[in-house]
Image 1 (tube, rainbow, N blue to C red):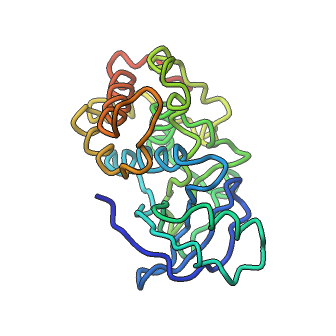
Image 2: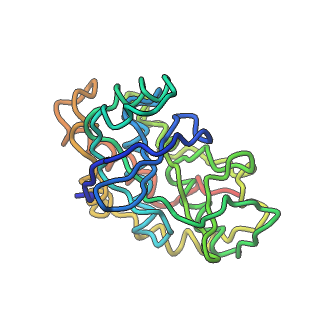
Length: 249
């Protein structure tokens, strides 16, 4: 299971994100970026954050620690912004926390260099999860002490917004032409050879087990959270199965 932390204090909203995440203090565990279940993107964005983030971690990519963040709606009682108040009130219970990386800088392709191997692994991973939100306009990458960190995967796994047609998209080609790392000559061939065999059904099941039941319950077309998890595993396993012709620069 993901580590569980409880929000003690709402510090400030983070206006950069369309879902209005917030910075919170959590029971002696430091600062966390809170992704709220009551945001317009809903619980599926949080499912995507966990599945993509924890899969990336197991493939050797850097992702800030993710946690189940328990939120009492009263935690933002002192926040003057009514939009924030409404969001937190709609998000009581289990939300997502992402460890705050102090001192990290937003990635700028004109200011930082990325080697072809690292670029290849990130682009390959984004192709696997269908991430449409890693462009130069919104890199969703951080630099800290010379290391590249991946954040904000809520816009990935688009297939889960239309389960009846999900299987048909499993082999869909990924367009990386707008990817923020496309200019760094990503070595996709090496990334595919190294990472492809690692994405097994066992690994995917391990990752899906980390998603809280409350975010998977009452999904139309499924009997229970276990059935939803199995559908994610089957979809991603089908995409990862060779030949992976969806990998393109």
